[in-house]
Length: 197
Image (cartoon, rainbow, N blue to C red; front, side, top):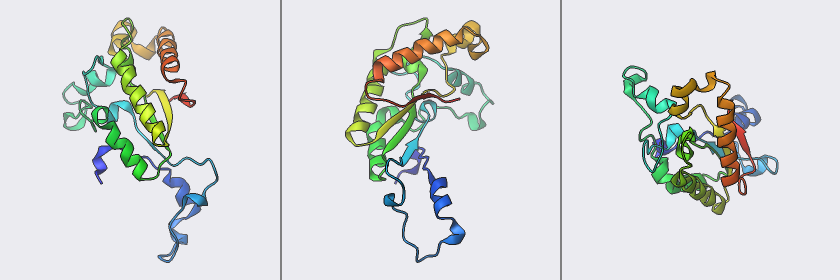
């Protein structure tokens, strides 16, 4: 399996709590879904900047990490998220990998600059909305419940340049505007939205 394709975050600590390695022998049975209570989510998790790629494609604007990672010496080997795992173009393959592993939940973050390339100082990007709609719909079709983080430390560079991003109380209005667009666009299918702080 292509391990580099997507960063899977399994709830393995719960499995280890129930089956600590010192208490298991080679004769023990495998962990089964039935070992856990009804409603328990076995899921995966990603961050938009770390997996999506498509750095300046389909109307996406610059975010603070795009700018920071392109300054030589800021990141080891001058790595950046320009391509990352290419989830933007390969999300269907990634969903199939999740389904094949038997997961029933996927927590992902929405790229602020894919939805609002310039924050409230520009237009909503319809291609960004379309991408997340396709992602959400395909997850639901395969029985994978989407959980969404609407802020995962990437903000429009425009807001950093104008007033320092989160260093200014003006950012609260920007975040509310972004959150309202997310709720309006995706809230009919997503019941779990959070701010990753």
